[in-house]
Amino acid sequence: MTQEAAFTILKTGANVFLTGEPGSGKTHSVNRYVEYLREHDIEPAITASTGIAATHIGGVTIHSWSGIGIAKVLSEQDLDKMGTNERLTRRVSRAKVLIIDEISMLDALTLTAVDQACRALRRNQEVFGGLQVVFVGDFFQLPPISRMGEPPSKFAFMSPSWKDASPLICYLTEQHRQDDEQFISFLSSLRSGDVDEGAHLALTERRIEPKAGAAHTHTRLYSHNIDVDKVNNQKLAAIASDVREFIMDSVGPERLLLGLKKGCLSPERLLLKVGARVMFTKNNFEEGFANGTLGEISGFSDTGAPIVATLGSAKIAVEPMEWTITDGSKTLAKITQVPLRLAWAITVHKSQGMTLDAAVIDLSQAFEYGQGYVALSRVRSFSGLFLLGYNQRALEVHPDILVVDSKFKEQSEEAGDAFEKLSPAELQKMEKNFIRACGGTPEKIQPKKLKSLKKKIPGVTTYDETFDLWKAGKSIAEIATLREIGTRTVTAHFEELFMRGKVTTDDLRKIISIEAEKNLTEIRAVFKELGSEKLAPVFEALGKKYSYDDLNLIRAAFLK
Image (cartoon, rainbow, N blue to C red; front, side):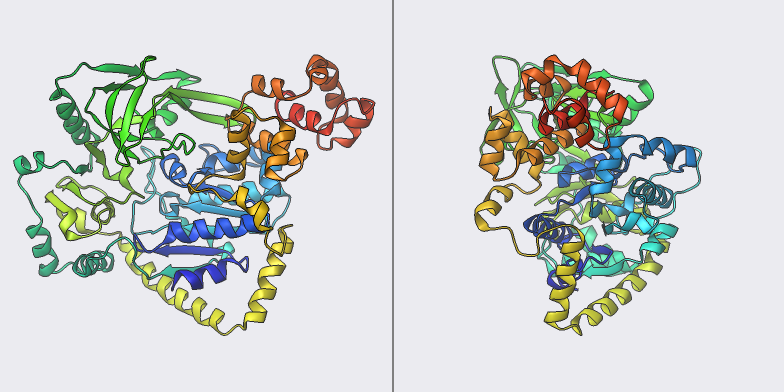
């Protein structure tokens, strides 16, 4: 299926599984659909199965968004408790489209839990609470990880919730990453489980000796952290300049911090020198970097911040950033570290989603289905592949996926054929009906307004735009004027930013009016007495002394 055909299906509001080989345009198609939704005043919920994947798409983990946290099974008590979290309920209730990226790494139990949460929080017993769900990913890539002592996790498509959602399969067949026909054919043979002597010969021709590999400047991929750390430490030690040390700061329960630290690409103890090759581990589009941006330490600022010269020649002074686990407005755990890691070598797991012009890859200790396929498909051609070694597992894909993949392809063809038979008028009617059902605007937002919504750097949301203007010193009224939206919309953005941990209660104290800030105790008491589901009763009870903007922000941050 072409990207255009998949886009046509997405616009009708159908549940979709968007899949295809690495480089087939899955991310591009999702970005295009997100842009389309925003053009029609619909803000989608953009999530991913892991923290690493979430940073790639400028979203959050599905666990955080849905409120399930680390739970894989939810009881009635769990769902009732989640229903008392007003911010979580509002977030899930107002969503219309839910996108889940890297679906291959989300297990069936967790997908079922997300479905249960959506139904409960939205008070709608349709699958996923009536949301359009868009699953994105490739099951030939890394599978879900099982917890220690548990049986192997089942794939998301084995969940009853997947069956209930009955997603249309959009199997993209175009190729935009690889341009080497022989290499494309080789990767296809891996997907089909048909690795013949010709494939082995092609890999043998790309093998290099370990000593020769040491001379290469390309990023190295290994299956185990121990190999990655060894290479990075050796490379760092070989640099003659002074070392600088950056220690991670952490606040919260150890059990939560363990998960945060595991998902954080930056190490607890980061050692850097001038000349060190590094990779950014977080998105900060305003400062000009994203997760995966490569560069080299060119120096340190007067405050001690490392200065990174990126491949695009920009020089960035990198300040510490935060990784958090939140429950609504409450931060449960937080770690703070400079968002960098040494990048002479990385694990295959952390490379998923990246595109590299060239890489030195060692698959001699591959241990997981799909690991070799992910690593090898990071590069664009055989000429960019330098192979230190590989074992049999590196060329194996999960047998269950081999079986289901042929069905996915058949279903994709059937979906494509069915939509080709629809007239342009029928498709347009379906598209407009879906936009109206989402509360959107059938006609595109006027270009003047759209200009502020479209960012040059992908992944920047409408909330980010509001946040950037606020950081630049603009007031709520000024932001509303510049973005051509109402002040109520701006305060709703701050509520979302607060839930994401980007602004604090102290920040919001500076935003609400002086009068409201001075009388927080009185306002809280009225909220407590009347409840906080609707603002109008509180507004009236307080004698209309405080604006809805103030009350909205106070409800967001000061009621717990």
